[in-house]
Amino acid sequence: MQFTKAEEYGILGVVYLADKDINNITPLSEIAEAQDIPEKFLAKIFQSLSKTGIIRSHRGVRGGFSLSRQASDIGILDILEAIQGPYHLMKCTYNRNNCDKEGFCSLRELLIMAEDQLVSVFGKYTLDDLNNWQKNGGVTTQI
Image (tube, one colour):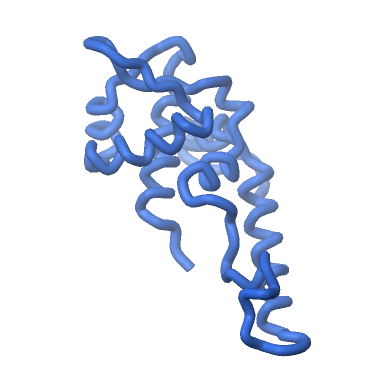
């Protein structure tokens, strides 16, 4: 399992915004350049984040993006699910009807446990945590 580029770039983009004042409007080109992300790809990702209320889109000559609320109120899981949808390792972990196996499946049970742990970690931390780790050069709390 690997993070998609969309997830990686989305997180990096909003971490950049988290370091700005919430009322500051930051041009997409500045975010893309600072985080070394292709601007057109970031625009698509930010569309999803804007539609779900993670960030705000500001139109016009001085347009750009800002966080829609404080970084401490934006969960990492919320960001990831805004980009990719609900987090599941396999289709059968959220809908047993998507499984060809009859009866008990030990692999499914293992994947459900792993998924629960992963979602728990993503759900535990906020954008503010990532921003602080970025500023301090590492994790300052225990995962």
